[in-house]
Length: 130
Length: 109
Image (cartoon, rainbow over all chains, first blue to last red; front, top):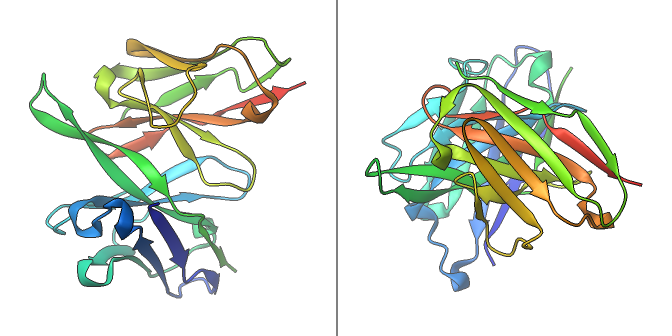
């Protein structure tokens, strides 16, 4: 079974930094971490889901939501089957549960390209900025 | 930037009834790029539908998706108590890469 486990959450100060990690496992089921794009998604207390960042399998393509651009950095270490989110210049509105999620590719044959949805999620790690 | 609007905000129904959840986009979407997720309290989201109408692995056939253009629907044909959750639609595409709708809460009476 594919599993994602986040860690690194906690209390951060405004203007401070935190680094989140997401460890992937499930190799017996054929999950090769290095083959898949990954995402960070967050959820503020009592609010909906907000996509934060995406990184491709090779790290060649990275995207950020405008709300975190210039402050957060996504990265991965395929040798360690791990995904990271470096969070700098923290603000109170960064308070949320942060989930890592695998981006599963689906071929759009009409357009001859791939689209993605998030098929495996971790349980989340809580970040509180105060 | 495309905006997703979901309605109703809350749906209160009885077991066995049918739930119809709406997701409307501010601009036309490729149907392939619309997904639905279920989130129960204290749990991570779970994908139900991708490509607007394809059920994800292990999802019961009482969940179905339809729609195109700007209007998409998630239908739960026979509600069960464990379907009580918040349901989000999500689009994949150009900046930002993913956008979630605000969610519809389904309460089972």
